[in-house]
Length: 130
Image (cartoon, rainbow, N blue to C red):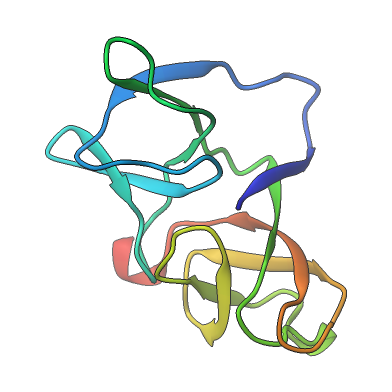
């Protein structure tokens, strides 16, 4: 799950409510396709994070992702300290990252734990999406 670790600004991003193309999970990295939210895949540009369950109108509360937002999550493989500053891909669950290079998530901090490292980082526009 992607959760806010810190922000470079004192402001809090407001939640907006949007329609989804599928069921979403709290903390899931999202993109939009055909005007609806959907899970971001390995190298997609992440534009929203799911912040709660859908409401009675079927809309999900989400927060827009900004360059000043830093998120904590776990990895599916060891993220060594040597990977700080590099980009990694999203896991297929949309809730964690892998150690595979060239994704939308920049590693800023890691505990370096074997298998499931806890990392803090920020999202960038992947090279393929620029």
